[in-house]
Length: 206
Length: 206
DNA sequence: CTGGATCCGGGAAGATACTG
DNA sequence: CAGTATCTTCCCGGATCCAG
Image (cartoon, rainbow over all chains, first blue to last red; front, side, top):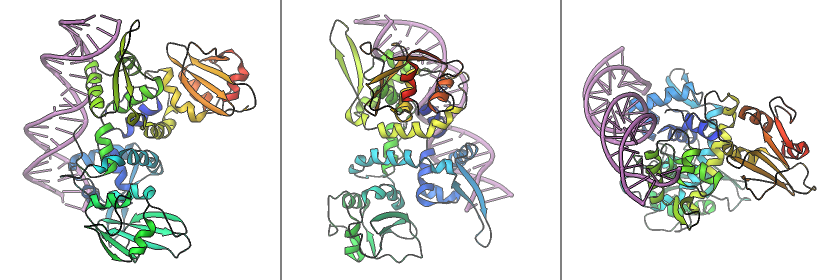
């Protein structure tokens, strides 16, 4: 992107992250952790591969991401946020918050990935039973999903981990999940399937 | 801007405000209040007039800004943020915060407007004498500047108002102001001129 | 002067094919 | 898997012009 050439904190920030796709790449790395090139492509439907390569180069020279090699047997080049890149969490959070009302408009032909949902879940969910033992509510599956962990009044949202045994696994069309976590429908809603403990799900609902 | 076509809160937010110049127009209206077309041009050096007209049309149909006519004798069409547009304050604040370290790099040939400084001042300044009567510190002038009001422990930053009589008026090159309000130099620094009460200035410094 | 509209060139973004 | 190469499209920037 061309610079705005303004001696202004915000203009200079946008010089670094205002390019198309850049902040969505940050979203992917914030929600998914270190990713391979093809992981990013899967999480960014619609991006051209050359554009993703361009952006990653730019973000690397702006010190927002780093590359490192994971040793064999699962050798791969991983891309991760630097500390400076992770500091964009505040910007991402506010964009997610401001955009939340736009999710009431139905998805139509829009693409959907379950892990995109991890960001709003962090402030939508509540632990309504802080005294009880921790529970894990899984949305989606290991391939694309997230685990909501409620423990001692705190809510954490992570990518699905094979090590965690979820107390409840929720399956539903994306717009129903939006309604569920914004309190417009209950855990018994049409089109919503809870595998496991419904109580665990209800514990984290707002 | 082309839509990302993703059912994701952040992607949908960026569909509305991810266009070049859009968030800087929000910056102008947040710091300056209602503006005429030409006020916006002055605060957005580098923008082409057709592009500004395009953006304003898009933002109006996205209900981020409204137009209204101020009656004679000072007849003019004013542009202002809607409530929804003002809600972008959080996004703007986080971008300003993230971009703050980039201001240590000198301005070079970058344009500068004093009122851009109003945004970071809101969280950089402190009222270090909450018991004392209110003071007003002015940066720049009526044409382009801002008033820092310290009152009862609170800090407010507004566009300069002809009604307010500043206790101190500060004049300095932009990079010196950055150093001053980030605590790297004192009110006695080289290149810095305080007209009025130095104590008033020191009251609001971090 | 203000508030644009119009035209045009360059460059970024997008689509697709291909490669080590 | 992790990109590169190429071509097309269209957004942005710059200049100019114009009506009220």
